[in-house]
Every structure is written in structure tokens, then in C-alpha cells.
Image (cartoon, rainbow, N blue to C red; front, side, top):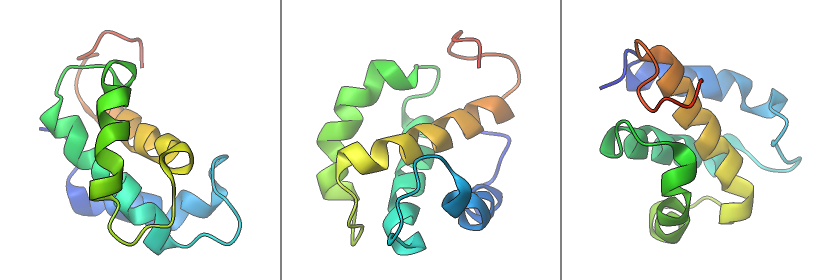
Length: 100
């Protein structure tokens, strides 16, 4: 799968999630971690597909995947997308041909 192992991926976001444009005051790592994990897992399950092409499927799966996160899909979506694109950038080439 990705050139980035899950621990490196997790560490990156754990250290930076509070500085992202989508971070919401009052939310903790426990809220965001499931969104990043979901992005990691779903990127692997949807290899070569664009985030935008699977977004509606991801939204449908969020409620059963979010564990104890307090984030609604509308709040979690950008974290999932951020994780998806981080993995995509770690891959050689442009697997989904979206220029990222």
C-alpha cells in the first residue's frame, strides 16, 4: 500500500492536527484520530480512486466507524481527506491522476 506506515502517519497528524484549517476549538485528538484512521484504512481499500469519487461512500460509513469521536461527517470530512491526500502524496506517481 502506501509508502507511509500507519505509525508515521498517525504521529504526523497527532503532532499537527491542532494547526490544520479544519481544526475546531474544544475538540481533542480522541475526536480526530478516528477520522485520520478512517482515511488511512479507506485509502488502502479504495486504491487508485479519487477521494471525491468515494466521498459519499465514506460519509455513509462514518457513523459506524467513528468510535468515540464527537465529529459529525461534516466536521470529520476534511481530516479524512487530509489523511487520504497525505497517503496519496507518499505514493510514487499519481495513482488517481488528480494532480496531487
